[in-house]
Image 1 (cartoon, one colour):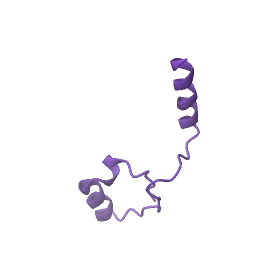
Image 2: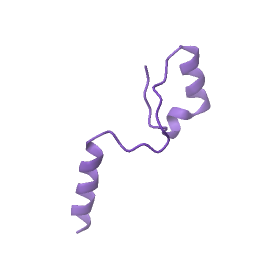
Image 3: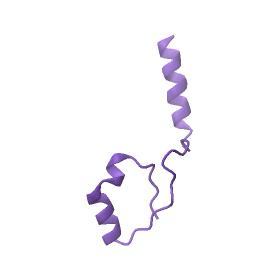
Length: 52
């Protein structure tokens, strides 16, 4: 099973064709779902600190 966040490289035609040819199932993922990765919050906090 493959999960992607609709990043452009993951939804490119050639990538979709490869995954379909290899019978890799996709986990449904809404186009604008919130980030599930906690590191994203760390990068956001770090960015705010640096800008101050």
